[in-house]
Image 1 (cartoon, rainbow, N blue to C red):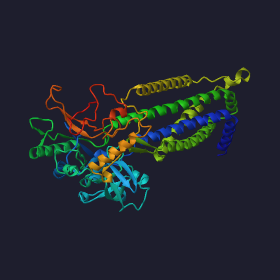
Image 2: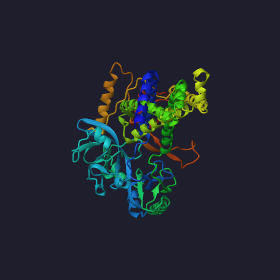
Image 3: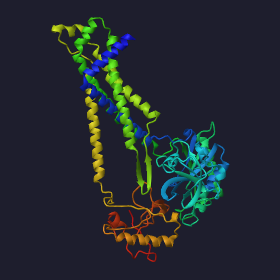
Image 4: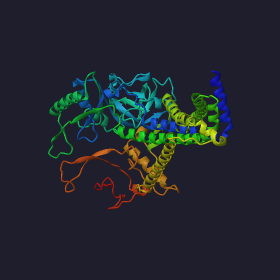
Length: 581
C-alpha cells in the first residue's frame, strides 16, 4: 500500500510539473469523451428511443398487397378478431391529427383512435389510471389516454389529471390514464400524444365520415396488430389470416374503385414481423450507426494524438527509466506509475467531459417543427445508458492514451540510455510507425467525409425547391374546433384574407387546405388516369389534393410552367379544373 501511495505522489508531481501537456490532455479528453457521449445521447433519442412495446418480436402487423395504405376496415377487423385462432390478442389503430384544447390554449397534435384491446396487444400499461379497455369501444365512451411526454409538457405533470376533461376536436374527453414510459404510438418516428376509442372520433365536419368508417368495409384505414400465441409462428398466423380473408371475400365482396368491369377487390393481407415497428427501421439504424462510427473514429483519433504525445514525452524520460531500472525498479512498478499518471489525467478529463455532456444535452433540447403547428419535442437525456457510454469512452481513452504508451515507454534499453556519456537514446517502438500511420489515415478519411458532407449540403442548398421560403409566413386556423359551420367559416376566412391584404408589408395572401411540403401531407384521394395516357385501364392510385385560392402560386413563389394558374372565374359554377405537379 505504501508503494502505491508513493507512486501516486510521484505521478502527481509529474502532472503538476508539466502544466501545458496536462491541460492540453485534459481538455482534449473532455472534448472527446463529453462530445462523443452527447452526440450518442442525441442519436439515441432521435433514432433509438425505446418503443415501450413489450416483446415486439411476438407481434405481427397487417399489410395489404395491392392497397396503397396497407390497412383494414373496421368491420373486417372485428371479423378477424373473432375468427382468428393464432393470436392471444388483436388490436387496431388509425392515425389521428386533431386539435386539443386545454383551457384557452389550442394545439394540433398527433394521436390514434384505437380499439379497446390495442394497448393490451402491444403490452403497454399506464403509469397513472388505466389504458383503454374493450368496454370503451362505445360511441358514448368519450375517454382519452395521454402520453407521458404530453402529460409532462402540456399538463404540467399534474397527478390529479385523472377524471378531468380536455377538448379534442371540439368535444370534451375525460382523461382516464397516462401512458407509462416512452411509448407514443406506432410508427415511432412521429410521436403521438392522445388516444381515444375509434368509435368516439368526433364528426367535426358533420359528414358522418367517422360512423361510416365503422360500417363500410371498403374504407380500410386501420393498422392491425396481433400478438402471437406461444409456439405460433408468423407463417402459421399468416395462413390463418389468409383463410379468413378468403372467407370474407366470398361473403362480403368489395368493389375495386379502379376496375370498370366491377370486379371485386381481394383482401390480399400479408403479415410481417412487428419488431420492425417503423417501416424505415433498417435505414434509421444504418444512419444512426454511421453517425456513431464517425464520432467513435474522431474520439480514437484524438486519443491516438495524445498517445503519440505521451510517447514523445517518454523519449525524454528514457534516461530516468534506465537509471531507475539499474537501481532495481521493476518494469511492473514503472508501468504502474505511468498508469496512475494517465489515470489522473484521464479522470480529470472525464470529469470535465461529464460537465460538457450535461451542458450539451441541455443545449440540444428543443422543439423541432415538422409541419405547420406540429412539433417533435427533442430532449436528449443523461440516463444510465448514456453514462455507460461515457464510461466506455473513458475506458477507450485510458487504453489508448495510458496503457499502450506505458507498455512502450518501459521497454527502453537501460544500457543504451546510460551509454554515450549518459545521453538518452530514443527507444525504438515497433508499433509507433503504425500508430502514426493510423492517425494520419483516420484524419484524412474524416476530412474527406466532412468534405463530401459539405458538398452534399451545398448541392441541396443550391437546388430550387420550387417554393420561395425566404419571406413566407404561415398560420393555421381550425374552424371546426370553434364550432364554425362551412358558411360561417368561409365568411371569416374571407375577412381574414381581406384584412391581411391591407397590411403594408404583405405582398400576397392565400388560403389552402394543405401545403406542397412538410411531413403532414394533405388528404389523399383515389385517382384514375384515363386513356390514352395509360395503357392499363385498371390502373389507379392515391394522390394528394390541395384546394386553394387563386393567389396560392404567387404567395408560395411557385411557377406554373405549362398552362395557367387559377383565376377568380374558377368558382363553384365553373367547369372543374386542376393543376398538376
